[in-house]
Length: 228
Image 1 (spheres, helix red, strand yellow):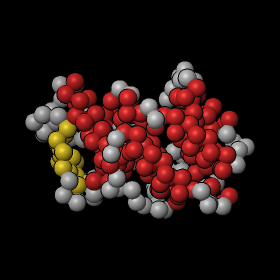
Image 2 (cartoon, helix red, strand yellow):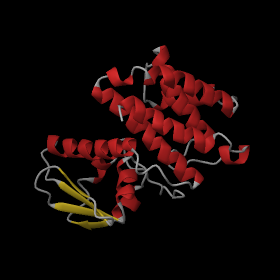
Image 3 (cartoon, rainbow, N blue to C red):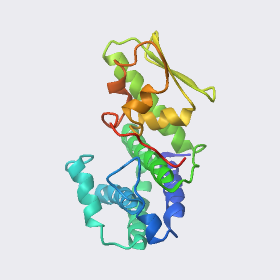
Image 4 (cartoon, rainbow, N blue to C red):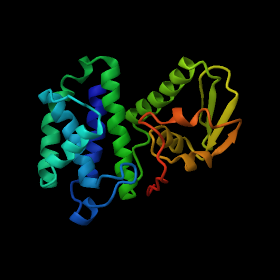
């Protein structure tokens, strides 16, 4: 799949997950984004591409930027949010294959992360065999490796109960073993707390690596308990 097709694939799955939800389900809190409900998460996803189309990118990615997106759509029916998302996404998807690789990858990683935020709120696991998921997983691991190398630190070996492994950085001296590779994906997305990550099996000192694991800021202090 091209980047455009990968983005559209995730957007279609997310739309299908929420389109027929009642107000009670739309109001469910999202453990991975605890300030938002399911509907607000979808509103943010729509707003990202809408702001990109409109060139409204000042402060992009900041808490203020995302809070404004959610607030603007607070009174909208879900159908209107989905219509906006489709219209704006069609514009972006028509151009995405020509974006710089780093930018297109960032948009896909952000959206696939939110797909699993959504699934974790609704208790509807899936989407783990998609190309976008692999882009996200690889992006998190390569980003961690780059950070470790830039800091001149020994590498960290990541392993999982489903047989997956990855060496983040050269000459690993510390290993972290999680129950499965999806659990590591969520941890590297900042969707697991510091305590949850420390509860994985570690050989070596985890402390130097904890501040580096999440690609979206520090690991949360409160446990993230998703319905997966």
